[in-house]
Image 1: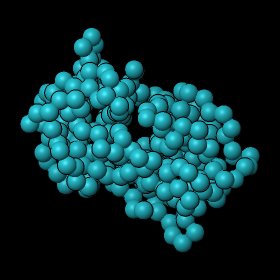
Image 2: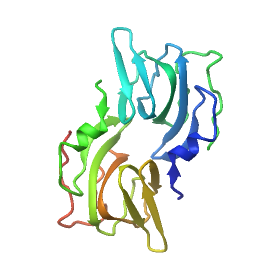
Image 3: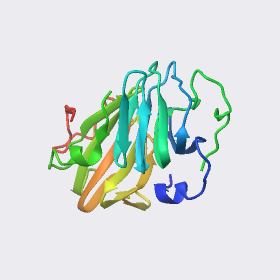
Image 4: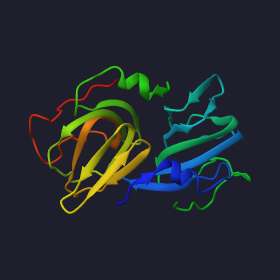
Length: 119
Length: 119
């Protein structure tokens, strides 16, 4: 039961799109990830996903609209809804989703992070 | 599916210890709360709780130790662990816990928030 300092954790890695696990509660995991560029279009069949911007900004694209997210803002993407995050510049994001959620959801690609590490 | 700006939401209320619901996913709720002073000693039988400091700082007291939490830091308190938050000055906290979690856990007091509103 140790506290997590987000700034310190984000300083420990520099790659993009590969979430690190920073906490677990009630079957959910808190993950830290850096986005840069455009991700894959995908959805999650059984998992709702929360995105909280810690530093920077990005755009969550849906098929019919976009949501701009800045530091201190969060968005919950319900299961089944196709989406793709796009970050013009690097952004630090805290995710909350069920343990075992795969980052690319229903899609497999070179961006799929198969096994996540704790940080 | 609307984004939530934490600063804007925290500006909408000024009381202490009464969480507002700001989001829901996978049976969990994201709650916003302001702490000031000392809360009740309590535990949650079946719920793990996450505390992320958005603005300010507070101390999470346990029977055998304390954890100081500042802006940008989070702590997960596992179910069954007795705790009490103490804030010397007002602090803004984002909670994550299962829907239906009562703020005072196994204890009922004047600080118990029986029915929470969305914000």
